Length: 126
Image (tube, rainbow, N blue to C red; front, side, top):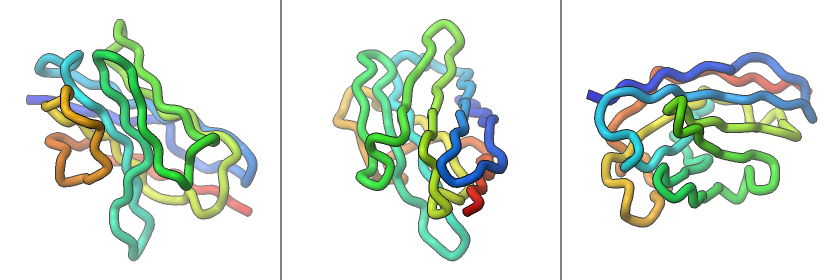
């Protein structure tokens, strides 16, 4: 059973930064693909970024490209989402996810991910 625990959310001003963490445990974490998704009130869950744990290759939504960076720490079994130049429209609950089949192409579809964290709130004020 894979467990994902997010942390690092909070309140930031527009133009500011936050770093989210996702600690993963259970299973062979190094074979997974990891994703960050977000969901704002009244909206569908949307893809933010993904990383293949084994090789470290990444994918980003166009809306965050150049502002957000996804990375992983193999020793700590932790995935990070560094968020810079935050905008009010980045306000959402951010979810960490794990896809057991980490060797296929990085997916932007939440239905392709098998495990989810509890979510962490990010609020950006203007």
